[in-house]
Length: 503
Image (cartoon, rainbow, N blue to C red; front, side, top):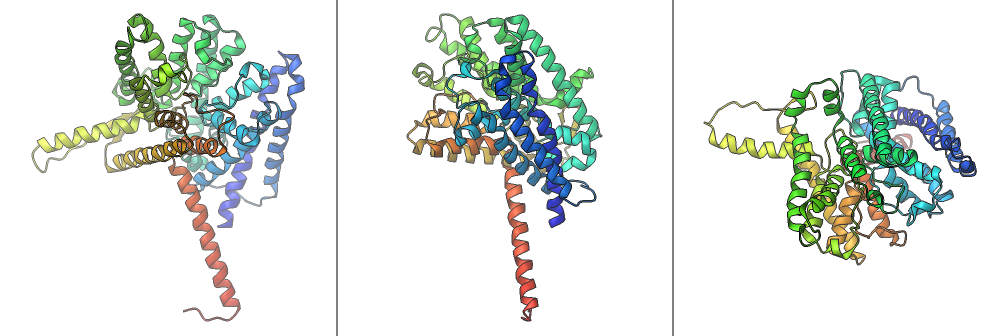
């Protein structure tokens, strides 16, 4: 048992080495903004602490990390994310003048790709801190730590790789899969930054918004988010980037290879695009004449919000905290449903995921079809996930229904807790769905002055939702189970040493 946890800690220290370099990235901007040198110290402090944790791993005597199993991977994932969330909060405390709880909220919101914020005026923040907020979403969304560890350990990191929510082995070799994901992600980052720069943003804002769009996070350098630019070209490019971020890497890889046939056979893209565009068209028809003068204007703003909601990005072009929009109940309810459904499997997006919805829809279709077919008919159904062909069976259905159930149960509990704090039912449901599904759209509940219990309810929602609950449950269960075994062994040893007979 002890050896198992030593392996976990040893692997954790390797992640901390990578994190130490990641946290130093914002200091590079001191080259372009020399006046920011005075704001570099929080990142240096965080890096030093991370290096210290890494070097502590040399004291751990483990001959080989060996293969990290799924159970060990669950513990490693949760432990790593807790420590990194705490360390990532340091710049927010020292530069952003946030309290501990507020800083942890901002940190978890960034790493989980949520985008809800404690800052009331981001224009007053240091450029290093602005970049750090965006970079945490970029890093957290792609799961850079697990990808880097996958490249270092290869097949031995399989448990960590899968427990972090990844099943997108683009090729049989895990190390090569991790490399391909990083290459795809970085290529989109370069292209997105150039596109936003040409659309009207400066280079700094273009890079920040590209990172938070691809990471489906939604942090912005403007208080009014994308809406403050009031630029149609920027909105169109951002919509494309949000869809790219919400698309699974397996589908991206198939596209890059030119395997259009496999892409078209995947149900997820059809669901995501159909849901967001279909909802936008229906709502735009409803809103024309009531909220907007014409259909085109309504579609421009509403489509942006539906894509932002389903992708889990959280950029806003509408002030959703205003009574005008809160009272638009069909709009708010549809956004809640889209936020809960989320993006595609193996993307940077959170939520239930379109693949699970596709599985449930196929289950319904298969049940009706089976009812109409003669008894004893043997049926075999195949569904596509990227280029992979998956045999549709009970395991897929069980996993989909389990995750959907956990999301819905947690959604009800979290919304009820917020309602107990005096927030309205619709506002509570909207805000908790946004936090749990890593979206970041806000109707005004999130603020630095909100009650701490409500704040930590959203923090827990963001954290557990990022890992689809099961990994957190598995990790806690393993630790408790191992502790109970250790206690039982200790009691047994004491009884033996004291000469008490064992029956």
